Amino acid sequence: MEGWNKLQTGFGSLNLGQSANKFAKGFNSSVQATRERLGQIAPDEITELPQEYKDLEARVDALRQAHLNLLKITRVYESDSYDYPTQIQESLQDLTTSLNSSLASLTKGTNLPTPASPPPAAQYQPKTLPHALARAATTAGASLPEDDKLGKGLREYAGAWEKIASARVTQDQQIRAGFLGPWQTTLSASVDVAMKARAAVRASRLELDAAKQTLKRSAPAKQEQARLEVENAEDDLVQKTEVAITLMKTVLDNPEPIKNLNELCKAQLLYQAAAAEALSTVQGEIEELAVAAEGEYRKSRDH
Image 1 (cartoon, rainbow, N blue to C red):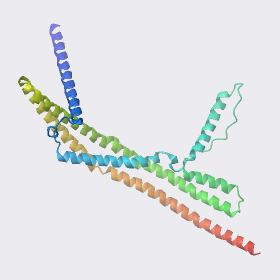
Image 2 (image 1 turned 90 degrees about the horizontal axis):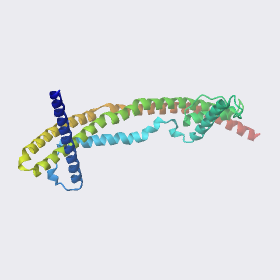
Image 3 (image 1 turned 90 degrees about the vertical axis):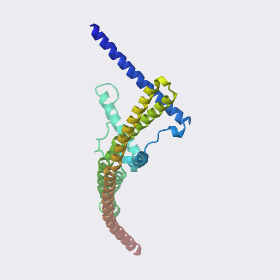
Image 4 (image 1 turned 135 degrees about the vertical axis):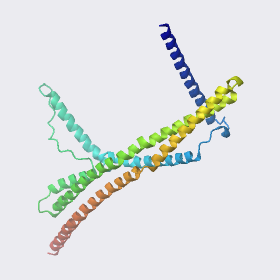
C-alpha cells in the first residue's frame, strides 16, 4: 500500500508540474502577443516566418474572401422568394388559414364559438415570381370568355410561366446541391483546417519568441533550461509551419471550387434557356392574337 501511495504522489506531482509548465508557457505567449501589439518588441526580435509560408497565407486569405463574397449573394438561392418579396402577404394568409384550422380543432366539442372553416388547403407552391405570374395569369384568363383573345393570350402566357416556374425550382435545387453545399463545405472544412493550422503556427511562434525573451532574462543557473525551451520551441515551430504549408497548398490546389462554380453557371444557363424558349414560343402566339385583334378592331372601325 505504501508503494502505491508513493506512485500516486509521483503521478500527481508530474501532472501538476506539466500543468504549471503549460500554464506558464501560455501566459508568456499572451504577454509576448500583447507586447508586440503595443510595439514594445523590436521587429528584429520577432521570428521571421518563411517567405513561402507568407505567400501561401496571402493566397489562402484571397481564396477565403472570394468564397465569402460570392456566398454572400448566392445564399439567396436557399429561399424561394428571392425574386418575389411581396410573397409575405401570401405567407400571412397561409398562416391565418393554419391558425384557423388549429383553433377549429381545439374548440371542437366545446361551447366556444368555432372559427369559420378555412377553405381546402391548396397544393403548396413555392413563393417565387414565376409561380405568382402563372397563378395571376391563370386567374385573369379564367375570368374572360373562352373565345376572348385576351383570355386566350393570358391562358397561354400562364402556361409558359408554369414551365418557367418548374425550371426555376429545378435551378434552385441544382444550385443548392451542386454549388452552395460544396462551396460552404470548402469554407467550413479545408479552408478552416488551414486557418487553424496557421493559428497553431502563430501560437508556436509566440511561444518561441517568449522563450527567447525568457532566455535573455534568465539567471546563469537557469540558462541551460531556458536554452532547452528555446530549442524545443524552434523544433515545434518548424513542424507546425511545415504542416500549415502542406495544408494551405492542398486547399489552393483543390479543383472543387472551380467545379462548383461551373455547376452554378450551368444551372443558371439551363434555367435561362428554358425561360427563353417558353417565352419565345408564347410571345409568337400572343403576337398572332394581337395582330388578329388589331385587324378586327380596324375592320369594325371602318364600317
